[in-house]
Length: 260
Image 1 (cartoon, rainbow, N blue to C red):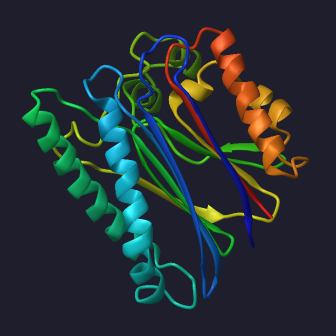
Image 2 (cartoon, rainbow, N blue to C red; image 1 turned 30 degrees about the vertical axis):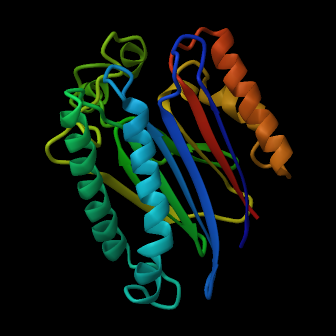
């Protein structure tokens, strides 16, 4: 199986710098094509958020080149990735990057942090790691959110103290429970599942999805009809400009990956 993929990021209408970082890397292996997609959203309320997000995206890029082959060929069987081994590898990567970003922030007396949403696709399986409130979705006939936000409002929803409607407009909707670089210990969420040819994955920072409904995303992107990267890019740009028209204040970033 192969992939079509695009990345689009925009500084938005308010901020002076784009603190989002995005990454797509693809490779051929003995067991077929593999793709890694990463979205990191630097903390807007913390200094040097763009440094934190870039550092984590770069760390995943280096992991894909240097560490992933060991996960694939030594810890897995015939291209079927050992999810426990992958989680262990990703945990080590996140922990080391967390310490590096924390030390960098302390040297400038300016704490900085970043979210993480990383997606690995291979052999009709997806593997996801999430810290914070960037998201990964799978789109086909339906719109399915794979990740779960690590936020104050999501915790309140889970514990029955807040409705989803209240959370959408809550003044603390952007308060994270943890982020890479500004938390002493990181506890990522991991997800795995299968996909079919024709499924489309969308990974984005929170600025991309606050002001657009699931139904609007499905109508604009048309995941089952989209056939080429230019159409995917056009859809990403359209959604970005729609967010800006609706006065989204954050940076806006999205990755779209079509499986073929």
